[in-house]
Image 1 (spheres, rainbow, N blue to C red):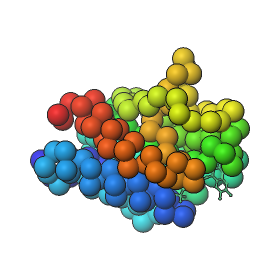
Image 2: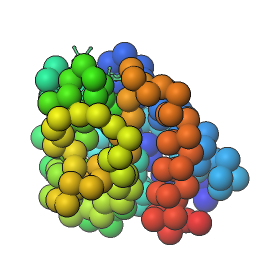
Image 3: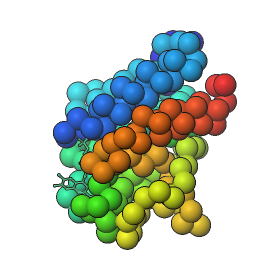
Length: 177
Ligand SMILES: Cc1cc2nc3c(=O)[nH]c(=O)nc-3n(C[C@H](O)[C@H](O)[C@H](O)COP(=O)(O)O)c2cc1C
């Protein structure tokens, strides 16, 4: 049962990394197992994603709606992966007050790529309780984000509770609980 879930993240100023560690600890608490293996994609190849049946991907948005640099560097490689048997949950870091026109855009771009290569996405998250003008990370009906949207700049106090709730949700959607 160990390390069934690969959690791959890119992080320039450590917030997405901190969330990765919290999600890992939370899932291990819920499941009572060492289920989650962390991979910082600045160091580990994204080709390792294909070794897992369950994936969690963490991506912050940078520079007015752009990908974080390690995701950018690996963007084309992801298209070559066979993730058709994978269930994938994605979370993003962003700043809704500083960048309200681009809030969590990279989360939306990664979700679209993952779905496009045939993976099954889980983990949508309600968009109430946020203040922003536009986001590329909304579902078609505009009621949800395509994954967990975290904002440690403006809502740090909500992060732990959101992670706890989302971790339970995705473990259920993965069919592991
Ligand atoms: C120069 C700069 C540009 C940013 N651009 C965006 C943006 O376009 N959209 C957004 O939602 N957040 C944006 N952010 C906020 C980051 O996503 C946020 O700080 C995040 O926590 C960084 O995660 P990391 O430390 O894992 O790299 C920006 C932050 C900085 C400093």
